[in-house]
Image (cartoon, rainbow, N blue to C red; front, side, top):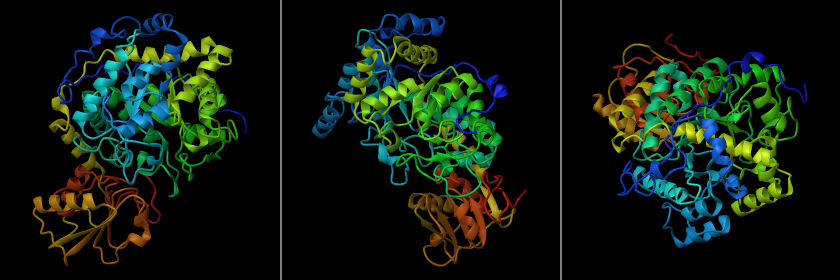
Amino acid sequence: MSGTVPRLESMSRLLVPVTAVAVLVSGCSDGKPGSPAPSATAQDSAVKPGGDPAKQAADLVAKLSDEELIGQLLMPYAYGNNADKVSSGSVSANKAYAGAATPAEIVKKYHLGGIILVSSSADDPTAGTNKTTNVESPAQVAKLTAGLQSAALSLPAKVPLLIGTDQEYGQVTRIREGMVQLPSALALGAGGDPALTEAAWKAAGTELAAIGINLDFAPDADVLGTQPGGVIGSRSFGSDPKLVAAQVSAAVKGLQAAGVAATVKHFPGHGHTTVDSHSSLPVLGQSAGALESGDLPPFVAAAQADVGLVMSGHLDVKSVDPGVPASFSSKVLIDLLRTKLGYTGVVVTDALNMEPAEQWGPGEAAVRAVLAGNDILLMPPKLTEAYKGLLDAVRSGRITKQRLTEAATRILTLKFRLAAVPRPEASVVDGDAGKAAARASAAAAVTVLRGPCTGALVTGPVRVTSAGSETARGWLEAALTAAGATVVKQGGSEVRLLGYGKGTSDLSSSAAVTVAVDTPYVLRSAKGTLVATYSSTQASMLALADVLVGKAKAPGRSPVPVQGLPASACS
């Protein structure tokens, strides 16, 4: 029913306060990840482990000015790959965006509570919101995060930053070089083993913590619809709410055990949409009951796992607040998420430089987002205007001091809880433990949707072709050679890789084996043996090679329905 929310007492009992943990203080004195910088140590911070985090946060909030409190709510991006030394172009861009020359100066100018590191790749559906890149290598990121924390701790309040990034693994992955790459969420869903998922995310989170990132905008908690065409795709764990909930819970536990706060997104669920919220406002037309049973379970499971943050989606939820983006709706974020579901942790907006948020100016959007129930404002399109809008609203009373302190207290409570975990050593980055976890989860995902379940899927010389997966093709050729196969450039049995966004026009009529290395929907139109890895990482290609030559079975099951095909031909 329009304007109503479902009755969810059973879900409400499952929700508990956030107890996420993450490393708060990062350092790098010599360019190597994990080397502590003297000016960015826990001893300099007002946020230290011990005591009641909520009381510690309240005590600190009482000492902060309105300007300092507003800063805690802001999580912008910045131009430049170093905190203090950036190119002339980055200086100009930073001044236009934030009125300061460098990332460190932006942190100091606004008493920032957090900052996001961004980058994008060609097949990244979120690329349009990322105006720059801060990512080159793990060592560079470690040096950058150390410099940013040093800037924050040089301020009188000495409050460290939340330093976040979108490291979902798969399409949306900011740091791709020099770190272990997990298979996509959809691949983990195909593996169907929450223990493997938790181990994989713990390994990945440990690497993030080692380079100074203490907040990950992951995992994606969206449940896919049963028909192809959605925009979330392999970022989701699948289309079964219960299975997705189990995977989300495992990912949250693994990430936070490593010392990185997890963020589930996009509340109350982006999986049934065919419109991309980066460019326009998607409509969720399902009933309140369908929303409760089909979209909310993973968010509830995440709350059970003490998730650090919930991200509000730019989504028109017709059954709750028609016509208003959920990210700006108090009916969604207060009545549903907080009152009905009982969530008490931090709520962060999706990027405010996405089209649905830009119907207002940056200042007005920031104010409306806070009034709707968001605590952290992510990537305002113009930081100078967002800050001014908030300050004017606080001074006029439009945003009450109670609302401001409530948001800042939640953020600082999270920071105090995060302070308990020591930063891992640099040696964990791209280490054996992470590679083993990625390999195990990738091997569990490989699915044969049509074809033999024992023995080799190809014999004799093998020719690998691809549509949009050239790097994966090279990895598979190397893996096949290492597994004893003869790889040729002409003739032989063709193994065809189909990547992100590829359709029936990319199929090869001569392929003996067609492999979906992203969503598997295209396989419904393919001939011959059909395999899905759901991911194009090196670990996935190693696992695929073992199945192709008959050294390993394919234990996975498709976590989404593919027309005319079973979830697995081998079970």
